Length: 253
Image (tube, rainbow, N blue to C red):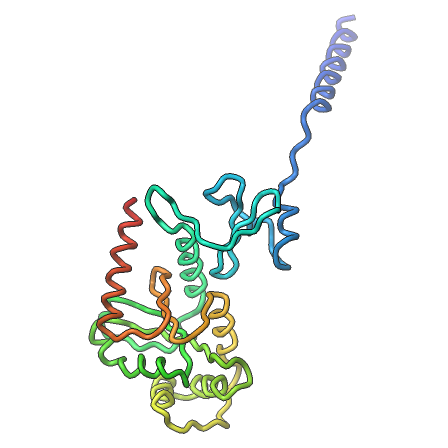
């Protein structure tokens, strides 16, 4: 008799639990599953994260940042500012993305001109034939003297299958890349028949495009700030100092 009562109690409890499960609200689907269909092919759900604005997601592609409302009705392309601090929150995301993407490139794939004890490191997307790239390279001795370490990545503005692109590959295939780059930027004739295995030119060009490089020289600081165009050495160092101060102020907020 006692055994029967226990069995009936267990069955009753199971029924109550089953009814409770049936009455529990169904789990809401992730709204991002629909939103990714509105974005470029290959976008994943995790590429959409909540932005500082309620009901709006932020989407980072390369170093480009955009925003999408949760209902998928509005796509926003612009900067978001924190009105309390006046900080450009979108530019902070861009800078982080630039740092991550550039840090993924081994320094063995860069051409580096460095003083013994550098105070600053800049990464420069360069074109062998660019007038202002040549001007910047002509300042190399002074830049190094001022403590600036320069890391070059190739960005032939004219694109694949052009003379500038081929020159970049010839520089890479040289026994002394730094010297060959210096001579090429000075207008020296290169051995355009020189070949070697695969070069990083195409990868670095694609990287520049993903970072939003449109012209050269394009300078990226260690903290991911973007300096577009040539600056004389002392002005460049002053800009680097100011950006460092600004970064410290942001970190202290």
